[in-house]
Length: 275
Image (cartoon, rainbow, N blue to C red; front, top):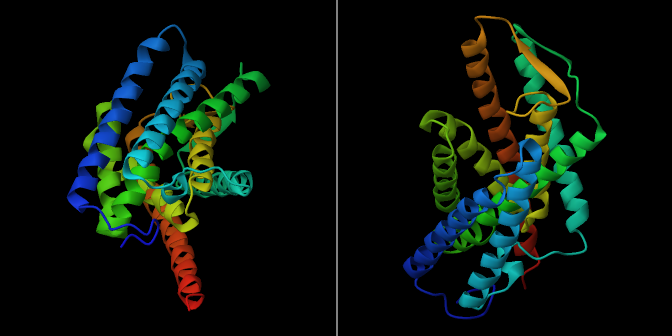
């Protein structure tokens, strides 16, 4: 029996096929948004793509949830009275993680940040909205319906690893190499997925995801100019890149472990409350 719905659990391989279909559909929607945003540049383009693709991912979630006769709450996609508070909490936790990571990179030497010119409040607002929209799309596309359905039928870590690999593959198709995709987005997916499972919703991981990207943009570590400019000593670029990667991995994994503890505690409380 499915404890969330009270119905007999469907064949898990059928659910896996539906999850793969959902992921492919989200990828198609994302690809289709690019021509619609072709006339825009920089963070305006990211805002446009993120907004359109988020609506597409939400519509697909609604469609697949109804197909399986479950609820939006069962995949973490429902908006509740605590959603805004959790989004805000996730954003501040994300900024904290960026700060810890950037401080570690700075301690290695050969890097510094200087004030960037040409970035005003309007540009920062567009960047924030763009990264929030992109985070909504990626969390709906990966850590909502796909992760929660796979977790229910295949277990926590099998679901996490599967989704992380698909997340890495999407970034590989977007231009990353496999090593960077596996050590970057795939590791980040484990954190965002664990946050989604621990909180049984997407609000906190959306805030966490948006804060990480916005924090990196602010530090001048994205393709678009940020509030600061990241300056690396000439000849040290490759070394600093790998220092960044090697500090990113433990920071994200430690945060993942913290959310796993949150999840275990919630499970324990649920068991104690069961008659």
